[in-house]
Amino acid sequence: MKVLVVGSGGREHAIAWKIAKSPLVEKLYCAPGNGGTRLVAENVAVSDTDIAGLAGFAARERIDLTVVGPEIPLSLGIVDEFERRRLRIFGPSQKAAELEASKVFAKQFMARHKIPTGRFRITEFPEEALAILRSDEFGFPVVVKADGLAAGKGVIICESLAEAEQAVGSIMIDRQFGDAGRKVLIEEFLRGKEVSFIIISDGTKALPLVTTMDHKTVFDSDKGPNTGGMGTISPSPFLTPGLFDEVMRTIIRPTIARMDEEGRTYKGTLYAGLMLTSEGPKVLEYNCRFGDPETQPQMLRLESDLVDILISAIEGNVRIEEVRWNAGASACVILASGGYPGPYEKGKVITGLEDVMGIPGITVFHAGTKYENGQYLTSGGRVLGVCGTGATIADARKTIYDAVGLIRFDGMHYRRDIGTARMGA
Ligand code: AMP
Ligand code: GLY
Image (cartoon, rainbow, N blue to C red; front, side):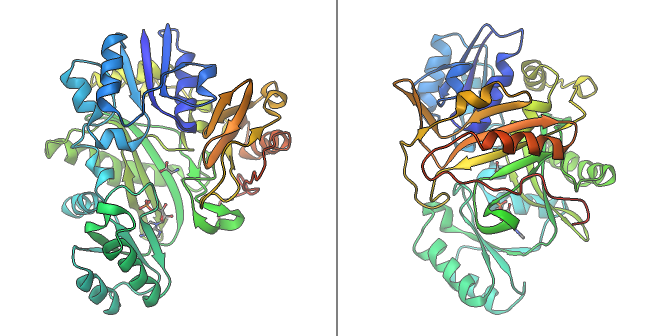
């Protein structure tokens, strides 16, 4: 089989790494890929948003399966286009991907079907947004969100009325996130532990992946601005078996069933970002794709053949009971460029990668890297994900931080507290 992975992050390196192990696969491509994907796949110079270019490549090369990493091609309708051309592809259709592409759609969907989520108001008028905030309906902190895709940046947690007014101004009037700011959501601030709950759906059934916990803020102890994710652990220490069942029963299964009933059958990966509140798990947001960096520790724990799982999901026949996971633990620590998540420099030489390659239990997934003249250079904000496995998260954590100590690039920074979260903390 010939397989194409679309995207260029750490998530895509992890997916490609796992697919490359499948006995079903003869040839693997990654478009556009990164410095790490070239070790397991052939990188193809087609952008992950060039839908016509990707479909043309898949048709020409007779690709048997395409797997899409990021949300933008999904929201642009890559799945609809491939299906129209009878090319097999894993991911939700454009109509199904609206769960992530429009926060307004997602919130109204949850409200319509009584899927647990925080209280909210939606408006397209700045004056109305300000009136809602001034009425103190939600208290403070309050969350102000742009409606559309804003690369994880369109969510502003406001501690005061002044901050909330500023957030409305930058989203709706200055249009800092472009058209995503045509509508805003004003949301109740939810307290609790966050969990990334990720499943693969075949349209009616949901295969839960092993649970993970992301670390969103840039600095230790959850300080500093939010990022795409600075590290992950699997399993999540906070999701007890009872809560897991509650999430499946009150959130995941109803989401898949109601999407199908609404004519938006959801086939692909569904990522529910949850807050475990004192009133039970509530949805913060849906993503229509695998997580980054949640996928990295998940792929390290997946023992079954990923290609087999993805094809069975496409065919509407995912065999949940057959999927095997490693019973231990895994984690991922992101090494980021100096300045990230703000502006950062690129093109820094990365050293030490060959020293960590041979360490038992360690796998390095590249994100913002490129390979040039025999060297790896930084090319993005999140540069590398140093990942490891162990019997426990504490074991994985130790192995990973020993390896991190060997890698260097100018400006490199990372969190030192990945894997220290404890139940009850
Ligand atoms: P989102 O893209 O909607 O998941 O928001 C990004 C991050 O903002 C989430 O992962 C949470 O850490 C935080 N967040 C979003 N909505 C809320 C909320 N209603 N209450 C508390 N934190 C939130
Ligand atoms: N790590 C958060 C995300 O993938 O959206």
